[in-house]
Length: 342
Image 1 (cartoon, rainbow, N blue to C red):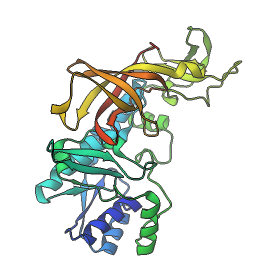
Image 2 (image 1 turned 180 degrees about the vertical axis):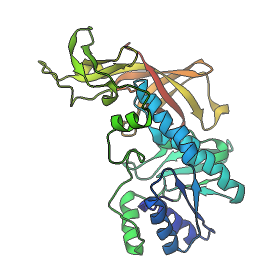
Image 3 (image 1 turned 60 degrees about the horizontal axis):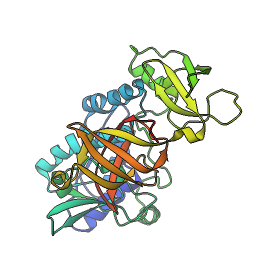
């Protein structure tokens, strides 16, 4: 429980359905305000509340990962690392030793397919809020013990119900994108967390290798970015690539952002026994991306190649590529390398 709208209403729903619910909140840093909020909500619902101190593991698995990926020139999604190693790793394992089920406030669904005897992760009813993308790494063991009470609700309905119930939550605010970066930019945070890494200026080049300007540290840029380049040019320019080893930012026109082929690592499949060496799927390359048809084939033990049928804009190393068949998620991985082939 975070003390926010979604996890609070999820806990309320489960209690109403007859479950003996206990709320648990992770302590990830020195700020305990979220813990206090969650405790107030638990008291309002009438359920016990526990706190699990995960600061050490969170620093190692999430914050350090976040910094390392940015230093490599990638744009990571630390929520994925948190889900894999903390929420559905450490917290899930601890909770399911004492409780029958583990529940969250994610907008997604778990459906049991009787014919194949497998648990499937399925998109939530609210297509705008659907969070199946950030849960792609869940295994059969995890899905079999997971309850997602908000899967058939829309965000609007949840807000309305929470207001009606007068639960002590702010129904208008949304969770931060990066919960541990509060009142500073990413570069300042990384500089503080990794003082050994020196942020240096470098060249901004076009795709032909011509120097167009100077950047203030490649950590400040991501693929597809247009603002903040500080370059006057005849056509709009976008960040098309980041070369951390050379300390260079590569820019191009919008058409240069569209690519087809990339590799993914850290692959997870919800039902590995069903996966072939080559298959087609709808692939989503970031949270708000409209999934597009692609062919996926195994390259080696640790990587798979994804090739879109039509070029997609701003394929970004560090983000997740998630595989869908209709509404169902069946796997995904982290984008590692993007090829220039069209």
